[in-house]
Length: 377
Image (cartoon, rainbow, N blue to C red):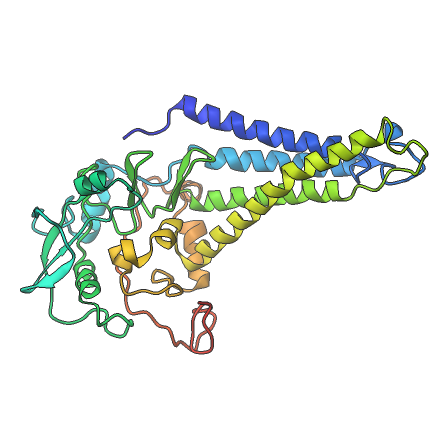
């Protein structure tokens, strides 16, 4: 385990706060905006304008709130899975050993494959985001398990895929994937982060921008950070866009007016790309919250994640309806909420294998992305 040190966290925090301060200073320095009293009146020059206390207070409040939400999520525990957690909680939840099997054994194969033959199936470990073929081969540690003859994927649109059927049967028997680096088999949807060198429960992604892994215990706080950050950028851009043209004078291009143009252009080039990026991030992670999905699963898909085999783009196999997804995302999984209600010991979510996918439901609220009336994909 090589978690970021305090020095690393301090560097990330100073970098983000410095970038936020620059954004605020550019907003304040932009002349003739609603942040300045009389700044919108043509007969009053910017030299005689004073700061509008109400707009300034609005800007400072959103600045402080954004910084607080950043510090709340930066360096937080995303749901690190240690051997102690696995022994004390997970192994007692599903009755399996730390290796993820019921008979406490892991059988090695020379060339791991996914397939069916003679009533047996061999399933590879998820290689995740490891791009190095040599490293990926070193991490493979297959489990050899009996597979029933019935097709688990029947009715899911993939009953002609024997490999998908075999993998689904394996997960139905609650066999967890073994992680050779952590020396145990983490719960379903967990992934070994190569940057932190530890398994993370319900892994979403490792955010280099804030230097923190995002997973089961801090994904909700990360969403709130994105929300306040988006509000802050919207506020700053709206202040800059409120600028009015300077008074018409003979020397329009002299002294005062040229720096004003430069300041507006520079502030806009700094803030608009950040606003667009923050908006895209907020939209993406809001969709993850209401569909109970993750960045990792959406980027890898059924091609690389065996437990998603047989699913399609809009299936969202772990969704339990929009209301339940939001409640689970905000309350049941986040570390801050658990501390608020006095829950001392964290229990990783033991996700069940994807069941039958319903694509023709009459309930548009429970299945808003795909039902018998329309499909978003």
